[in-house]
Length: 128
Length: 321
Image 1 (cartoon, rainbow over the protein chains, first blue to last red):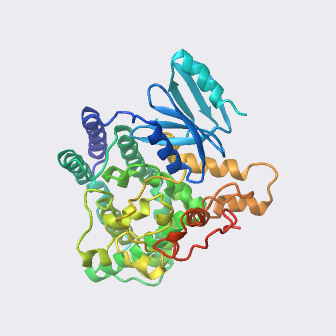
Image 2: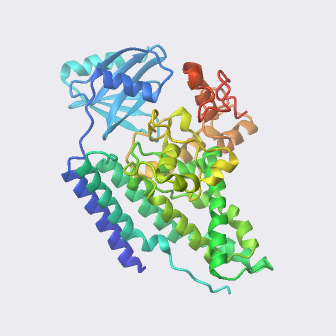
């Protein structure tokens, strides 16, 4: 197949599929309930014994305290990702917090928080 | 016969790939079941697929040069009859089984293959979430016996392309199970869903490309259980849709592990070549460790598919030592 034709097919194909999925509402971030967050954390870390879960008001993230340590769970498209809060930095932003993991595969998470939530979450996430 | 050529079937299949993805999206929307799609996940998978084709164009000469050198030194030439092509297809599928198994059991090769498993979705775009770094695994050497036996390099690459195209359609939840005779011999959506499952039960199972018989022969076959739906993705799922990070994250992980201070040479080599999950201090779990921990939590699963040989309470992460 001529390279020009292959390139055009690939570009149009990817753009078309992306547009179609977006128009079908497939770009929404998943919303979490406390129970969802518990279930998702156990999905990622089945050995952890959860103490409590604190959801963000926008329901896109949660701080999960476990007997094995504190962790952060967040919406990742239609799914979730979780990380134990071991090696990270927190940066205050206009609309909440940015959590920078020193992890090439999960570099950062942006949390959208109210003023009150920001202080609360900073306390929850601070390493003991 | 050094100028034998076959069409690049993977490139010619691109329009079919796009049409099939659109059909799957429409089917899921119409039926309200049969899989899930997410925009950024799908785009990442498609970009990974495009990058795979690009890396083949840019780096393909390395494998091709190696294969043509082998072709020059072998005294054997099996010709190009239909039967030879069919035999080549079957033997190349056996080659695929072992390369794929190495891809899950040797971290150096896993670093290339991991991106294919990095989506938490399982749909036709996942099939196209392919490696950009296969050349650096040096797994082209596993094809050497085929060429030395007298199969022309162009034929070997041709049947390899057909193998990849076959595997496209099995990346779907829209198809439940195929007829029993087909499920017995061929790799199917059901068998391959197991392979993509991150459930302890389904780890390191069903490496087949086209024929599931290889898994049955070599003891890696696990059937999909109706009572345990595969949970797709990685044991430690990644938190990025950035294709660069998807393509290279495990290579970065190897570099960081191998260069950490205070390790012996053996430990550094183990970080590069032991099964994924190896750690010198037992802080991580290999698939054996994950299965053992699962059995410790769920002892009733002992002896069931995926846990036939697992020893409960085995010390995780030491398995690779």
